[in-house]
Image (cartoon, rainbow, N blue to C red; front, side, top):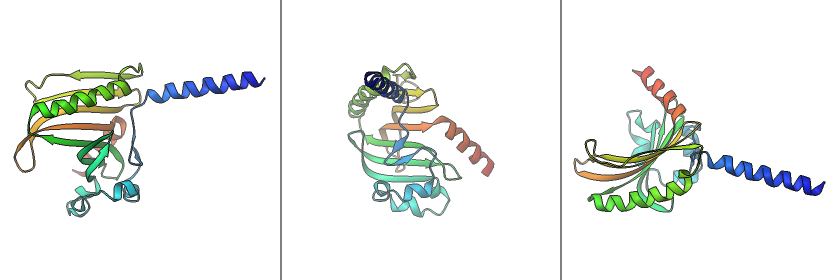
Length: 192
């Protein structure tokens, strides 16, 4: 009897581990998709790194976006981490990014990150991977992993203008919940 119970427990733990691997990450520094803006402000890991300007812009954008500086995520340092919230305050997207002057330097980080993401998500039958490995035309290359629940992880290199009008190669790592993003977009449209 004990052997049967132990076998059942081991099999259920193995099944739970396999199931967990079929999901894209949805929690970042303690805040999970679907939680709200005010909850983010209560989390110490977030509160200590919030940009003051992120909290004080008077245009309403501050309640739909939190920006953190100089964050460690995935074993790497990033210039910025961004949390995106719907007009109602629901967390639906997370992004970290770093700027580079040369494509060669950006590619080093991109390739390293892609290898890590392939290890985490690439061999999982429950996660679909799509890759655009050319920067021709749209000045972006990317790899995207999507799970069955609509959660997505997208890694990209994007050559674009900064807020200071300088051109940079940005390595960006996005995580978002597709269902929550659709609801957020509907809320944005209702505000128009």
